[in-house]
Length: 387
Image (tube, rainbow, N blue to C red; front, side, top):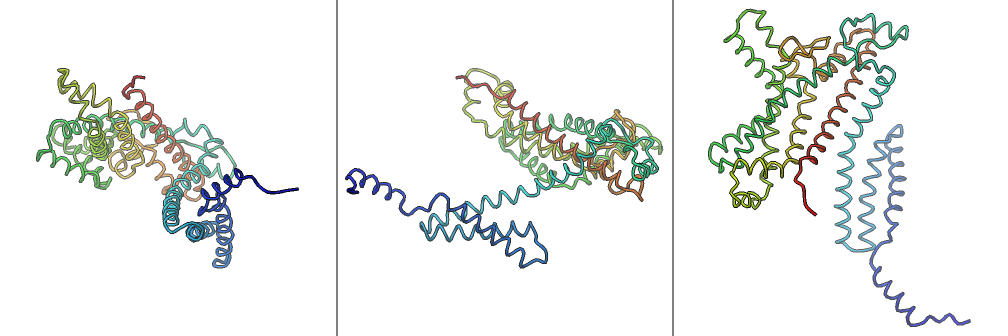
C-alpha cells in the first residue's frame, strides 16, 4: 500500500512546522516546575537539619526562574528568554507580596474563629466585672469564656465615625480649593507641603497634639481643676487625634482624583452657563466619586487599627460607653493590646489571648466591610453612562 502523501498534506505540515519552529512546547513550564520542586526539596533536605517547607518553596522558585531562562534561551532565543525572565520575576514578586497577607489572614482566622464559634456571646459582653478568677475557672474547670469585646467594638465604631465626620469635609474642601481655585499659587504649595508633613508624623504625636489642645481648651474656657482636666480623655479627643491622621490621606487622594477629571467636562458645563460651584458639585465630584470613596476608605483603614493615640486620648474602660464627650472609651486595638500585654489572670493568660485574637478577627472584618461599602457607594454615585 502506498504511503505517499498528497501535495496539499505536505504543504499543510510544512506550514505548521514553519509557524511553530523556534518555539518551546506549551507544557515546558510544567516539566520545569516539577523538576524545580524536586531540586528545591533536595536542597532543603541537604542544607537544613529538618525539612523546611519555606526553604523548599524558596529554593524551588529560584531554580524555576533560572531553569526557565536557560530552557527558553536554548529552545527559542535570547529576547524571549529575557522577556520570560522578567515576567517570572514579576510573578515571583507578586507572590512574595501575598505571603504576609495570607499569613496574617490564616493566623487570625486560626486563632480567632474558634473563639467566636465556641463563645458567640463575646460579641455582646464587655469586660465589666470580669476578674482573674473567671479566667482561672475557665482554664481549670472548663467554664465558658467570661467577658467580651462589645465595649471595644462600640468604641472603635464611634471614634472612627466621629473622626470621619471631621476629616472628610475638611479634606474634600481643601482638595477642591487646591484643584479648582488655587491656580497653584504659593498658598496652595504651602498647603501641599504641610499635608505631606502631616502624612509622615507618628501617630503618638497626633494623640499628644489632640490631648494638649483639648486640655488647653478646658483650662481656658472651663476650669483648671483636676476634675475638669479629667474630661480631656474622651472619645471625642481620640476622634480629633485620628482626624489629624486622616485629613492628609483624604486631601492627597481626593486631589489626585479631581485632577483626573477631564477639563473638557468643566468647559462644557461652563459653556452652558453653569456656575463654577455647581459644576464642581454636579460634574466634577460625581465623576471622581469612585476614587474619592476609595481614598476615604484608605484613610479610615489607616486609623482604624491605631492604638497609641487612643491610649493617650481616650484611656481604657471595661464597660460600654456611647458618649463621645464624657468618660473614657476603649477601641478594639487598645483592647487587643491590653489583653495581650496585661492579661486578666497573668498566671492563666490563654483566655485573654483568646479574646485578643477574636477582637483582631472582628477588626479585620470591619475593615473588609468598609471596603465593600466604599465600592457600593462608588457604584451608586458614579455617573450614569448612556447606551
